[in-house]
Length: 57
Image (cartoon, rainbow, N blue to C red; front, side):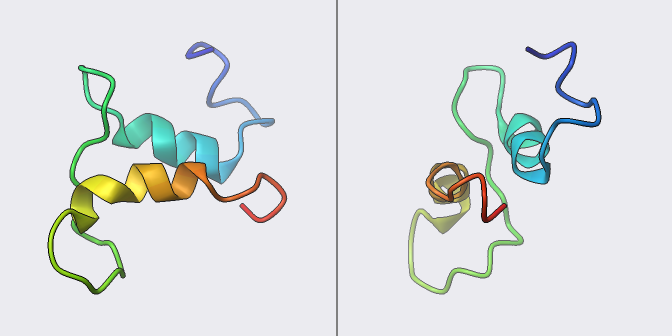
């Protein structure tokens, strides 16, 4: 899957999630999150983006 991830069929969502993954399979911190609540938001971005349907992304 990684070899053809950046082809024309890859969605922006898939590319974003791929770039956000760390070596251990979890998501890295994302400090540009527009979420405004205390604690855990930078690590939760990947989990939230996964829940967005493909037709929205």
